[in-house]
Image (cartoon, rainbow, N blue to C red):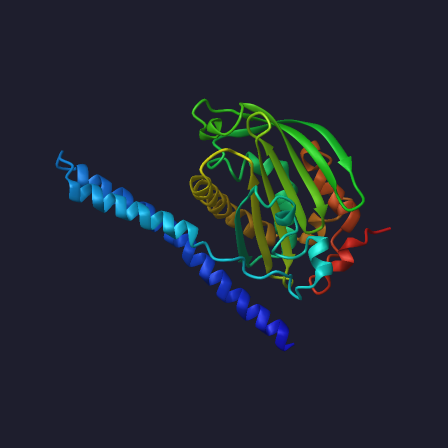
Length: 299
């Protein structure tokens, strides 16, 4: 019990430290922008102005490299078995792709973890919930679906519907995206960019109790961008999409989750195939007190 309490206290402190570091990023950006605008406001750029902007930029880069270490290396209990199952906040994928790992984020959200699962596996949320951040991205069609023992994989085509979509910097107008349910608590979003360049987003949904869950995001990329710049962009994008998620998660939490996860009431739409697979395997019986049970599919 003492060990568990120590882990929880350490997790709180680590999350607070990570939160303060994240808040510092837009603060430094605002300071640099404000100083730059003030320097050119009078139409004259002095050596002192240049030194101030340079100093602020140097401190900002130093802040990026002061990123706190990951909060803790296990799940609630922190054992090796949980790490292999993909249940812990510090994920095994980080060791598989050490040079491509770009950012990590961790949150404690006041919603049942099934709300997050429904959200992640419903392809239509890309069009509706993230209409602003993804700038009218559309799901054209599902091209492939393969069930697995613990989940499944679905491929679907997306199109950038707006000619002014900022995502055109990253990728082609039409790409085939891969969404994988690895375990009941691990979802991967694999996005092609250009050529062999990709962005891989690993989501980890760890139930704490019937009202809260821990939500972890790991992003990997082999883009040849300066890493500090890439980290800033991905941190901003992740925070923005999570902000868009919160009202939607609240709406799901207000619904009857037992009915939502009932195999007899799940939609047959192709955009819900992966969610339907989840329900077929696990239904609504996931127990926050013992998540390992969910790794045994229903008969």
